[in-house]
Structure formats: C-alpha cells, structure tokens
Amino acid sequence: MRTTLLSCLAWVFILGSAARCAMGDRTDLLKDARDALTQGKAEKALGLADHAIAGDSKNAEAYLLRGSIYEVLQRHKEAIADFDKTIQLDPKIAVAYNHRGSEHFKLRHIRESIQDFDKYPELRPKEAPGHWQRGISYYYAGRYDEGRKQFEAYEGVDQNDVENVVWRYLCMARVVGFEKARQSMLKVGEDKRVPMRQIYELYCGRAKPADVLAAAQADQPTAKELNQRLFYANLYLGLYYEAAGERKRTLEHIAKAAEDYKVAGYMWDVARVHLEILRKAAKPYTRA
Image 1 (cartoon, rainbow, N blue to C red):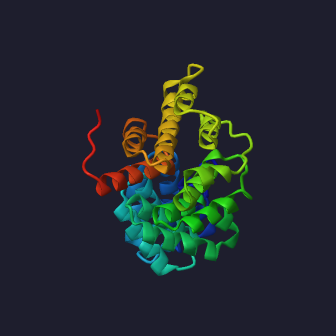
Image 2 (image 1 turned 90 degrees about the vertical axis):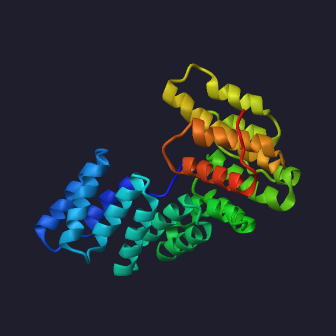
Image 3 (image 1 turned 60 degrees about the vertical axis):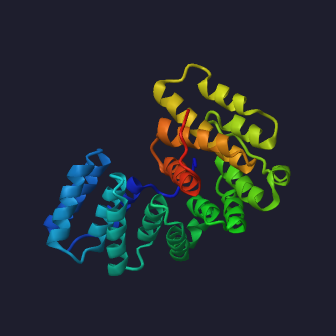
C-alpha cells in the first residue's frame, strides 16, 4: 500500500522522545541503537539494544526497540517475544501491538495478527480507518465483510490508492462473485505508481493482463524500478486470477512476485504468505 501506518524506523524516532531510561548511559545505548538502525546497521543496533536490556530488564522501551530491530532483520519469532515483553511491562504501548500483529502475519498467524491489529485502534482510535494491514488479515482469515469495511474506511484516508480499491474488490468477490464485485468497483484518483493504473483497469474489465505487464516494462525503467513494477504487476495478476478461479495462473504469478521480484516492505510479505498458503493447500507446485 502507498499510505502506511508509521514505519518501524519512524517509531524509533518517536520512541526516542517518548521515554527515557532512568540512567544516562542506558539512554545513550538506546539512542546509539536507534542511530545505528536508521543508518542501516541493524546488527550493531541489536548489540547495543542487548546491552541496554542487560542493564535494565524492566525497560519496556528497550524491548520495543530490540523487537523493531529483530523485525528489520526478519527474525520474526524473536521480535514477537520482545513485543510480548514490551506489552507485559506496559500494556498501553499501542505500537507494540501493531508491530506484533505484523510479525504474527508474517508467520501466518492470521488470527493472532487480527487480535493485535484490533487492539491497536482501541488504544489509538484515529488510526483505525488507515489500518489496511488489518483489512488484509481479515481477507486471509475469511472475514471478507469486515475486510471490505476496513478498505472502505481507508477511502477516507487516501482516495488515490489502487491497491486499497483492489483489496476491497477481492473481499467482495469472495462473497458475491467475480462479476458482481466488479460492478461495485470504487473509483480511484491518480495513483502515479506504475503499473497501478493498468491494474485498476484490469480489475474494472477494461484492460488485459498483458497490458499490465507491458506497462511495467515500458519507458526503460532502472533495474530497481523494473523489479518493483514487476513485483506489483505479478502480485495483482495472481490475485486477479485467483478471484477468477484460475489456480495455475494464480500460482504462477504469486510465485513470481514472492520469489523473482522481492521488494522491501509489507506487501512482499503478503505475497510470500499467500504463496505459502497456496502451496500448503495444494500439491507441491513446480514452476516450468
């Protein structure tokens, strides 16, 4: 999604001003850990956070920071353990629930992710409409009407996000079918990301899958940009084919998104989780 809840790194800065350790040296350790993380030195940040926790095992901020570092390192179980500890020490730290929910989703703990994603807006009600991650978890839990409502709420946050409109459609298609869901597609503003406009037209029935792939490769993008474009093209082609009941093509495109065109961010985890669910539910899939 284009508009997201505050990222892990953004929260690192907020946490730095929201709380302080009782002793100056521990404050310095956490500050240095935050600085290292924002500089892309996650392993160094982890060592500093370890030292901070060793010096003060009751510091909720330190566990939250270390959990965020584990999150960056994709060490999901360890991240969850630290967010558990954060919440145990201070149940009112809303972002700990949100981070833990994301980490649960990445491990395919869908029910647990929803529990945390539901708790977060209880503590921060203003964040509820923008919580598209919760909508995605609802989708994978089979709670399609709740997912639809979440994505409709997101329209009040951003009316230019093709992905939000598509996920609403996907929730509806599971309930009313491919064609009826298409008839209820929301209008979308200007999403400048390529090939989002073509993805939208595809779901509306005004474009073909080939148009999405052609747009992704047009205008000589850099290698990084091409990878990004092809990730989103294949992810949403896979989801499109799944809504249409075409299993083979669903697997083909979701596998390409998850394995061939890895990108940074939550949506790659969505593709990976989706592929794992597909493969668990069916015989092993061998790509040609």
